[in-house]
Image (tube, rainbow, N blue to C red; front, side, top):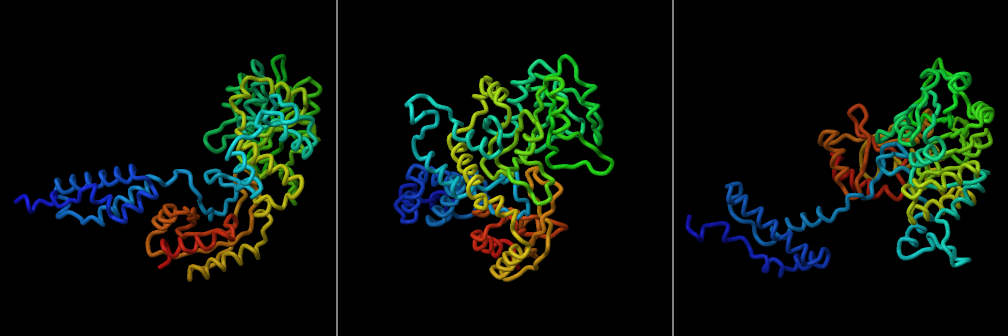
Length: 452
């Protein structure tokens, strides 16, 4: 091969590429240094391909810039980005659980943009408590004597057990030794809290006498655990919080009840216990998550007797599990909405949607994509909340020019990413967690990736 025929000599120089209008636009968006590096990387790849005989002839300068633009876009695409949840699972743990209310988003933006009085008392000019405002709202909403907030539900249980049972025993029903998302297991948390687990009863039945028989000199806590995302049905029985509270009083023990979902307002069927009811039934401490039925950010709430909450407040572990300023702002705004305008909390609003509303939304999506069939579906609250409650919903089901798995993958790769549901070889777009404002983008994504 003569030098003039060598495709390597035809590759454009980086400086020439940078002078092109398309590269200038990329510099304005990504910065000159990043664009220069992307061009160099692209040219090096082309040299390797030509040298290996995988490429005959060198691409022209516009093609090199275009390929570099794809590299830049991929490099600058955020790992954590917006998705459209069309799974029919409202509190989808893998998708961030509860969407925040507009007021909570505004509160986060305000404190994130600059300084705030995180641990500064504006009235006295002295150091203050970062959770003081939250605690007052939680007390007002639940009638608890005292309250505390940490960074998630598991941390709330861990802190409670570390402060109240370290070196002693915690009694739990075998039917409540659950594992939930991410490998979180109740026995592991008890051990991390420095206590010894004492299992009582059977998987399907645990009676008050089982707890009574297990109490000994080393017993510190009776623990009642929400079963989260499963239920034991059939020949079953469980001991109530009220029964356990009486037993705890007899033996001067602490009763800790983990309610998981953080329900403040009763559901129509009353199947899920509220935080207030658990306290009224006699639980000394009640723990829950903030990003499930409460509808706020990831957080763990601890409510109950002031003497016990104060012990948690003084425990060294508290600093390791405290909330940051943005989560605090979002949680405070969410609690204010629960007090004043609960209908503005997205999770409550979405759970209250009627079948007619969901069907009409599916019909609008069908019109936007110009195809597909409507299907009545069963949706779920998710996140371990309301595990027995099936929500009547509607979905658009689509036939694809490619396999269902390939279509789902293409939807996930979009911007925003679309997360659909695959059911019996069909692609379903459930409307329960799809906002009206998402329909235009969702329709465009489906037209591009799925519709024949």
